[in-house]
Structure formats: structure tokens, C-alpha cells
Image (cartoon, rainbow, N blue to C red; front, side, top):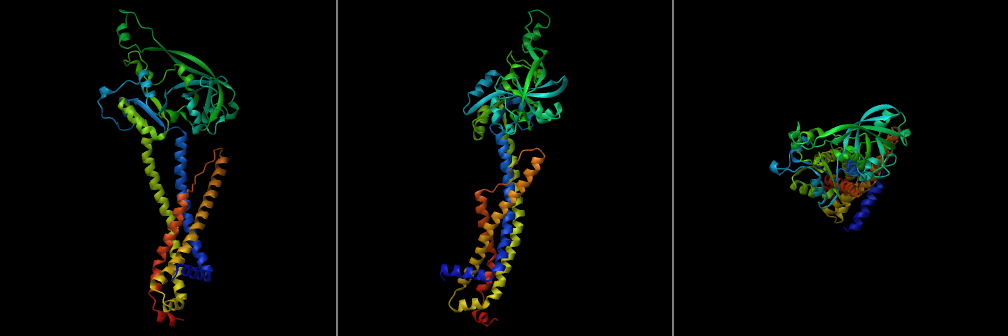
Length: 451
């Protein structure tokens, strides 16, 4: 039997049982819609998490520490070199890091406790310095106000929770001033030889004294998140200022007490440095180069390996749940085709009497099953997309009422559309195996006698 004749006959049979065929096709559509909706949810959540992390500047960031500090970062040491090869993370090391290929910038982390005075009332908080490159950080997309006007501007950006501590109407703070009280670190003058304590001063020239200081800042913006945690990785800041301004304050930080009792030959030693790569794909190579220099490294790509495994398992579970409805639709196809055999036994007998082979009869039922599967797959993709749009709309309405930024948790890429349609056709063909085999085995004489 020719392919054209086979297709024409199959479509005619489906039209004659249009109600049953339509209901079966809708069953396949519902199954495919369920599958597409579940998988698009998993894909959308993964894309959302990846986008947020990528925009935050975390994927292209490497945190550099001295090797003896790697253990304190709660991750197993990746280095097996002897401790004697470990270098001090000083200014010379910073310059060496800046000379590495594909490195955009290297900066120290400035984060210190402080007291903020606003309208005469003191508030304790943490100040963090933010580099100018952080303006492209996704954390600042929904900022109220604007980013720092310059690298040396005496301006501040507040985290929303801290802003709420200062005022019941955080947006009213923009344009107003506050005062930051901090402890400035001043180096001690070297003692004369022979004076009391001179041996200690000679052994460690990194001594310093603490002097209270104040800095007046103008509030220019308010943000929802804490981007300082992303750039440093070890903490967060609720009051942000330009990194250059924060560095010029020479404020005493947590690691200063440790450095005060450790010989550093008079050179400032950083607790850690942040290295930004040109792109996230270049991070592994930069990490290797930094380790060869004798330092410890940490990047978010190391930590996200387990996150990728989680999303793979999550997608697999969503696929299983979404396939349950498609399995029910498969039973509907089998039922439709089996009923068609009972109703068309005489027709099948005539076809075989006219010379149709068993293979032609099988192909006829396979074509009918594939047609229902194809149209069911196309309709199912459309239904699944509409479900995703409807749920996204509802979620965004809720987020808007909660004063939160809108988001898109569903994503239907082209390959998912193709996969859903192909899977619907394959499932329909599999469902047609039994009815097609049963129809092909009919005896033409008995079929012609059937009333």
C-alpha cells in the first residue's frame, strides 16, 4: 500500500470517529502539557538561580587566602605542597595576582564594625567597601536611588533592613546624611634601641594604636540584598561605601588583632584578596595559577557542583511526575485503537482480501496513533506554555503585593518543545503496538463474517 493512500485512509478513519479521536488527542495533550509544565518549572528555576548568581559577580570571582587559612574556610585543602612554600598575602603578592592572564582586577576586602549616628541616635552595624565594578552586579538592579557617583565619593548605600531601622519610610532617607564612627588604625612609632619593649618592637614592626574617627556620608541608594557577601564571601555589610573611601579610612578590622601579634616585617598583610576574571569560564585556569603561586583559593564554581547535581535530580523527579499523565493518555490511545479494531473488523477483512499485507494493516494503525500523538504533542506544548504563563502571572502579582521584584520561574526552550512532540509521537506509537499486532493477526475470512 502506498504511503499516500495509507495516510489518506488513516485520516478518514479518524474523521469518522471524530469524537473519540478528539478526546484521545486531548488526553495526550493534557499529558504533554503536564510534562512541559513540570520540566519548564525545573528549567526556569535553574536558569533563575544561575542568572542571579552570574549577575552577582560570584561565578567570575576567586577568593585568595594564605594556604594556612584554607582550613578555616570549611573546605578540604586542595594543595599538597609543603607549608614552607606558602607566601604572605601582602602588597607584592597583590601585584603578582594583577599580572596573571585574564584577571580584570584584584582588590582587598574592607569590612569593619562601626557605629552609625542618624539624627543623633546610634546604630551598630557592619560597613563594607564596594568596588566600582559592582555596579553591574544584579544586586543593584532594583536599587532605590542610584549607585555611587564616583570612586571617591563620600556616599553610602543602605541595605533595606538597616534602612528600616533608621526610618519607617526607608525611601525618605535618600539624600540625607549620616555619620559613621569607626576606629582608625595608626602605626606606632619605632622605639629607640635599649628602651623598654624595644626588642618587641624590633621583632614586630606591625604594631598600631586605635584612634576614634568620624566620617560623614550622604545616603544615595537603598537595596534589597546584601551584595557585600557576594564579593567577599565571608560576611555581609548593611552599609556600603566606595572601596577607595573605605580603604582610605584605615579602619581597624577583625584580622588586625591577629596581625598585631605576628611578624610581618612591617608589610601589611591581607586576610584575603578578591580576584575577578574576565569570564566565569576562565576561573579554573586562574585558580590553578594562583595555587602555583603558593596561595589557597576558593570560587563559587567549586561549591556549585553539588548544586548542579541537585538540579539534575530535581529535573528527573519532575520528568517522572509529568510523565504520569502521559502514561494515562497512552492507555487512552490503546483503548481507542482496540475499539477501532472491533468496529472495523469487516473493513480490515476486506483490505486483507484485496491483498493488503499484515504490515500494511499494522502501518495503518501506527499512522493513526502517530497522528493523534503529533497533534496531542503540539496542543500539549501550547497548554503547558499557557499554564506556565498563568502561574508566572499569579506569582508576580503576589510578589508585587509583597513589594518584591517580579521574576519568571518557567522557561520553555526550543529543545523542550521538540522533545515533547517527539516523545508524544513515540509514546503513541508504543501504545499502538498491541492494537496494530492484533489487527494484523485477524483472519480475513472470520473478519468478513463479523457483523
